[in-house]
Amino acid sequence: MLEISGLRAGYGAVEILRGVDLRVDSGEIVALLGSNGVGKSTLNNNVSGLYRPFAGRIVFAGRDISGDSPQSIVESGLIQVPEGRRVFPNLSVRDNLELGSYRRGRARRAANLARVTDIFPRLKERFTQKAGTLSGGEQQMLAIGRAMMAEPKLLILDEPSLGLSPLLVETMFALIQKLNADGLAILLVEQNVVQSLAIAHRAYVLENGVVAMSGPAQDLAADPGLRRSYLGL
Image 1: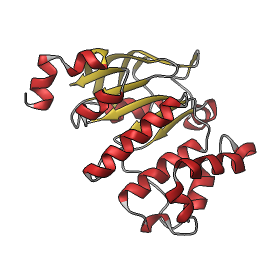
Image 2: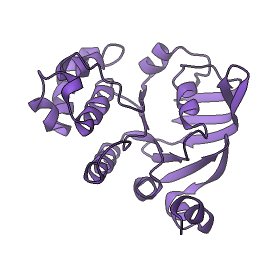
Image 3: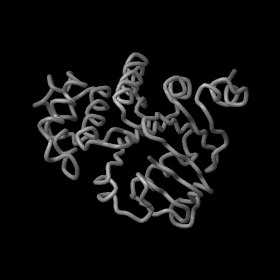
Image 4: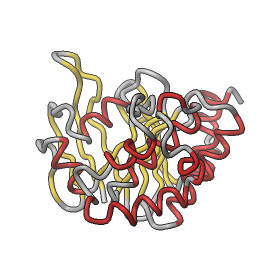
């Protein structure tokens, strides 16, 4: 589904990613873990076409998208839910959702809207409410729902648990599992190591712009080095 090889990327003359290899197969949840500033968002921005990599290849669904525009990448079915939700605060919940189908999924907008509100019944209750007045958890649901309107083949979730209460974090991870159980491939970019590894099939740990660890999520969860570095155990 997604294969990244030898990715070197950054901003201006500053190199952040220094040769990253990563893949997501069909039907997988793959977790990309790491602290703030290690390059997770840089990887997302390059995969989504917001920046051009310095070197390396990004192949999605068998096609090299390294130099493609963000619009083209969205149209191909690779959809990102950015960190911080970034809903349109002065538009209604319904308008936010319908904007998700602007580039992809427009012909099935009504059916997709029904599907999204079935997944997120809270959003249907808030259809006419301005998105900026929603709670943090509701805004995160809206951001994911908007992405689902584009009928993603691969969904990138950037820090979906950021700023949520512990109870809502549990709800969010359960939702991610449900989306994956329906067949959706997900790249989960998170600082929440414990819960990410609990639901992921495989995981990568990014440190200082390189992959420091990778493998089955269960194996990484039991790794003494990771437990010491990230869990304080």
